[in-house]
Each structure stands twice: as C-alpha cells, then as structure tokens.
Image (cartoon, rainbow, N blue to C red):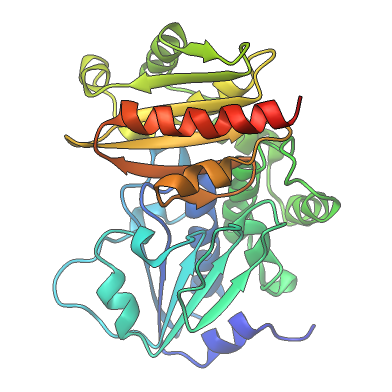
Length: 322
C-alpha cells in the first residue's frame, strides 16, 4: 500500500500533537483517539500527545482516553500538530492555538464543508460521513489495531447517526465492515455510545421536549436549555447529546434547533435538517457552519434576537421548497 501524506509526516516527526474542536463530540474524540492509538501502538519511539477538553463519559469507552491532556504551562513546539474534525482555527481545543502555530508542520484533517483550511496541509473531504472516515483512508489498514479501530468506529457511528444520516455512503459501510473485521464489537459500541443515556440526560431530554415549540406548520421545532435547567438537573453541556436528534425525529419536522445557554451573554445553537433545508447556510449567519444537514454556531448577545434571524432564513427555505 502506498504511504499517505499523513503517515509520511508522522514517520518524519519525533514529536506529534493531536487536537480537535471545543466541546468534543463522538467524531472528534473518535478521530483524535483513533490516530493517537495508531501512533502509540505502531510508532513507540514517537512522542505523541492528544489535547482535548473534558471527554464526555459516554466516549471514555475508548482505550487511553485517560491520557488526554489539556494545554498547560509553557507552549511546546512540536514537529507535527494535527487538527481533526475541526473546521476553524478558533474552534480548536481552548488554549492550543499558540501551540499549533509553533509547530514545524501543521495539518488539518476534516469533513466539514465550512472548513477554512487554516493549516499548512489541509485535507478536507466534505462528502465523508465523519472525520473518522477521512482518517481511516489515510492510515495503513494492516496497522490499525483494535483500540484504533474502536475509536474510529465510534466516530463514524456518532456522526452518521448509526449509518442513517444522508452522509452515509457505500464507502462508509465498507470502512465500517473493515473495522468489524479488525474485531470491533458493533452491538456494544452502538448501544453504549450512541443509545445509552444517564438518568440526568433522560431528565434533561424530557424537559427539553416538554418545552419545545413548533412553527411554520410544524415543520420547524426548537427548544431552549437554560442555565437554570442545567443547575436544576445538575447537568453539563455533555448531557445534551442526542437531544437535537430526538427533536429532528419528530414526525413532520424538517428542521430542529437546540439552543443551550452558556456563560452570561452567549448561547450555542445546534441545527439539524432532514431533506432540503441547508442549515450550514443558517449557522453561517452568526459565523458558524458545519454540514448541509447538521451545523452549529455560538451566539453572543440575546439568543431570542438570533433565533428570530435564523427562523426568517429557515422560513424562506421552507417556502422555497413548497
């Protein structure tokens, strides 16, 4: 097998750093830990570090997740710094930007259509189901150990909605099949990572559904998770996993919006659509992005003003499809 540019850069490096985006999701953790485990188990002489914010409990099933670091102390100059599943430089794990800029070689491996190509080497495949799928294609399949395969599989099932989102392709299924051949227990990973919820997550989901509103002939649904709700349920932002998808699955809904309050004055908007609304275009109104059917952004200021702006664009797209 011909060596990819990624593996070629890795073997030329003595020190490698890996990072993803803020508030890491399944694909972010999966791709970062997949590459980390691949390097650790194939190239023991290379010093490799992975920097992520707090890994959600449901993703700690991945081997070596306890070795994830946060950037502290004096910045370190790495030979190679790789960003995975991250569309913009300013969305990298908090605190790593200076470390990233100091690296001899920087690399950006992603699948977001909104990617800004912020590294020296940029490899973006918008049609891929996930950054984990993109990563798999850059690795030597004969060197993918079980721990790397499990992480990559987790990333794929999370970003493809267990192979049911529109970004799932024939190639996605072929990659998944190869990972199963490597020994991945598909049932366990799908159940424990994608479907299993803590009691707190179930409570938060229930409240989110009770508080939800439908507009535009019930084709759009949204809900707001307030700071008070986080406090009442002793929940964190990692407990929001699965809520926007549950909203999207509501019968008759084309667009789902999950709004969560952060620190005072900011809020996170997550958008999902089923068939024809381009939510990447919607999120771009506030400097966000992602994919045509899944996108997000952070809003500074009154969330209700931003919501009104988003809904106007969504209404226009819904009307255009009539």
